[in-house]
Length: 297
Image (tube, rainbow, N blue to C red):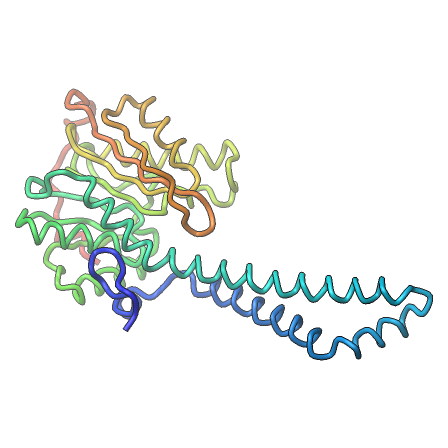
């Protein structure tokens, strides 16, 4: 069995249910780590032959210089293998055990789940945070429901199947939608959460460019829009956590808090939590009941 992750879940069990959406990255890094490791091992085993080969290519070069260059190349190859292997392990850990741990931390940031009737997971992906929210609702007997929204219908359907495996399908609804234009009425949800999703918006614009920042800002603004006055939002974002917190303060959100830095996917990340002011009633006239049955994928 695998090592226990936060929340009492076994890593092997988590992988069996959720898998990883970073297998291509992990495979790419592991393959190149194996290639560099093989190269360094070959240099070590056949070092005299390699020196002879290099000396034949450059007979004018002094032998000590050739020996140093060969040794340096082998050291670089070995070090590269170690770095690539570490990166592969970090990505795998971040996409599985750490993601579950952060989901538990995000759930714990909401003080009273028994009063939550409607929750939204923006960019639900494999459904790890989605199901963590549903489990908390079930545990606290809230009788509410959490909506998982993803840009791809097949991903949303797969997340719904995983909710069934976790035994929380009666608490979960999944649907397709765009984070930048959430298909929900203003002020509908008691809680809105999102894990490692906003940082991916505007990816084509890349990084910290104004276009990418504008895309993330639109997504964050939509999360605020669909949150009820007095409702709580929790966002786990890569790199842009402090920027998200600043935007939320500019939107006059209350109790904006930024967690300590957590390294994930080889970069820094933060959990940002906030509360929508009770006097944020703008747009409430558009509030309409949501037909859950119509929105189940």
